[in-house]
Image (cartoon, rainbow, N blue to C red; front, side, top):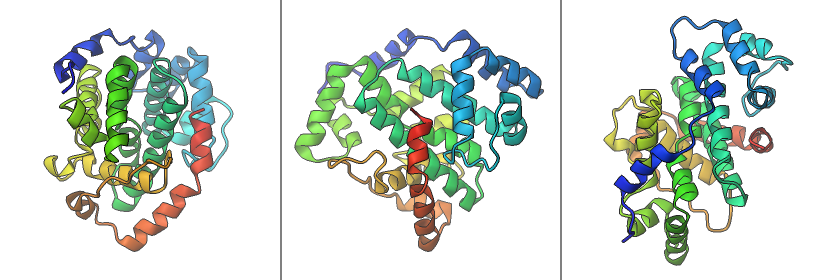
Length: 278
């Protein structure tokens, strides 16, 4: 059993670098009920790197926008504020966590997250669920795994070694080595950073959707995660497709024929997903 505990990891979250002030101000503003496009554009313009990332993502098939946009105000008008909130949140957090750890492993992590987000969006559209919340929840579903890698590399390597030795799923290796898992870490971070309740629930429950409310995004993100692994986001010889929860599948109400069609739709966007997170 690991020398660290879940309490150790949760306590360490307070030591994470804070989000940049510009980004935190933007995210706080986007939570207000009286958001104005001009104010959002001004706040995004204060962070050139964030503005560039937003435009790159908005203009890729990764996000699905049909019209090319050249400026942040144009992007906000075409996307709408709700979709813009998704892009801002996702882009800001991806950029922030990429400063904590880098390398091939982190690239693979974000490619899987991007693939899962794409899967969640098409599943949500098919199931009549809010696509923006589903997209964001899926993009951030494994954030606890990134925390473990960045802040506790020794334990992370032990989990990886256990997984390789036993050819098991990562979450099983986490329980074997640590006694807790990345979903619990992600739930703690979501609470600390005050993520929207539906996003926090999906992060916490994507491996145990049957324990979440029927209308929770956890079921959709769970199926999207399985779908992304089946499509080999990020791929690799040792990548295992997680078992599919029958409860989660039945809650979506999607037929297998529809599911196969959606698999092809997401697979066609693979290159854009990789470019969008570069």
